Length: 461
Image (tube, rainbow, N blue to C red; front, side, top):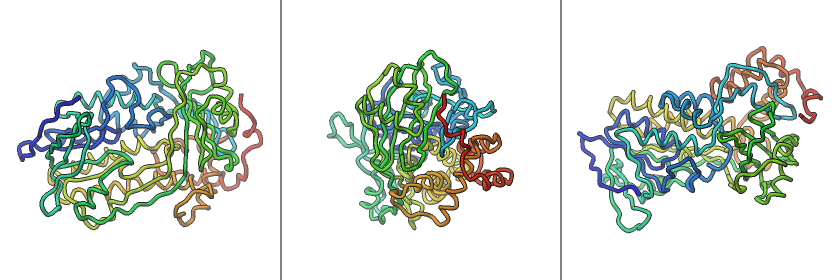
């Protein structure tokens, strides 16, 4: 347990606070360490000293994707991190060669390519990043502590710190003062309530309800070689609503996550879990795991809805407070954008602080508007796929059927066209704009392709 001490805020000792040692919180703290003399992370959990999942990150037990763009940003913040991860068992993978993906009724073409990604468990990645952050000379982590509220000026126009308690006793409340407070506490963020108590209007929210449930288990990776390191099965036809992933991890493990939309959730018992896998659009995951050695219980998690809290729409925000990560925008984890979005937000924070030159007047609202632009495309890509199901609840954007029809044809094209496949993976990994999928060479081929090749829908070996 960390010891709490009051940290006064003075012009000589500029202090920043981060609520939550989430991926977004850790990356934000790394950025803040370049601009503030002292950075404090406040975390409710007692943080593990080894790579293991923790209560405050319930999705940490499940499959995670780190897009190449996210890895590039994290590598810039922590030089040499992925060399350390590979030494600890992380696998380097080629999206075009090592990812065997059944998508819209066809298997994407596999071939050698220049793109490189990394496959490791979320706990291992978070452990290495947390260790790097905690080793920074001006960063400290107070775990086992809970933020009870914001401290503000008498007129509520500026946040001056937070009130915290140690969770093991919950009695003594102390105040930590700071020039900047960042809420990276996740979907359960209390900032809307805290701002309401200070007289600010309710935060508008946009939600897209998907009712996704998923179940994950670790398996011993067999010695038999497969033509893939990552396997993905998406629904086809879409009425099936079931998704499955099998990724290779450190310590010769497979992590298998099964998920389903709108109440079609995988069960937690072994027989039901295997039967759910057998009834995916293709049986490859079932065939891989039916005789494999389980290494963990089956972990269950549910995700009700995509949610964007529109802090950027407020006419005013108090000085000294910003919100990022899932506390700002939470996306369906089926598409694996969360960690990369956290990295993009950290890069935006770094750019914004650099441009501010130490002057934080008006910074919060300006930053939230920039963040809204950052999440615009990921939100559009995620929700446009979720809206393929008629049960999905939310406001459908204009022109959605045309966009969905085109992206489906591009996916069919990836069964046989290397250019379309490479471009698709570049866009997926946020290395290029989605507009690149409208390159004339891709568009001409996609619009005339009405259905996947018959051979593409046959069972793979």
